[in-house]
Image 1: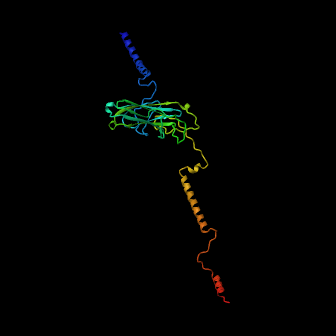
Image 2: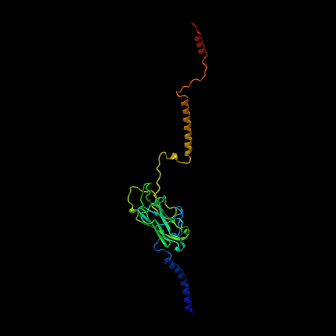
Length: 290
């Protein structure tokens, strides 16, 4: 009886230790949902304009279910020395539901919404009615460190991908389809060729927390001059208004004096009556007869 009681008490004493050890063991075991490679999950949405474009992180893909005929927009970042390549795979609607071939197009724009030309890849592709998938791709030029405004060369910053349907039968608009997007970039800042210039900040950095672009330059302090304070401040305009009014009044008075009395002498009044003495002497002189 005593042996049984001692065994029961020993078992009760071990229960707290077992309860504390269970969470530790579960915490040490790896989570089945954790990603071993650390690659971000694919984006499941797409924007319908430049303003609503979905930002893609570096190495992030996109898998989106769309309707045939919609405009789709994504945004990604590119740094100097990189050569981005955009690849898309369109899974078309079932052939039994389609009424003819479909033509899809992919376009890439820079941060200023200037269309960038592709050096390689298929930008426009047409799928027959029996085809199930369609592949598109676009390889941009190497991103430069700086360029003239008129050149339109690719610069560090945000780039927009637009996928659209160029030619499709009217009954096929709205059919369900899916799109897979992958963005790859070759090269880095070490591959950028020196060109004698440097871009101060990337073109239109993304507004959301998505694409990573080239680092923006630190703000530069404004250079101070002896006249800097004259043109700043909330009350500086009152000083300039009062001073301008005084100078205008002074210029008006001086102009009036110069135009009214150019030589500084006041002329006699028109129609002034001469003195009596001079009038009488003149009349006597004129009345003398020989």
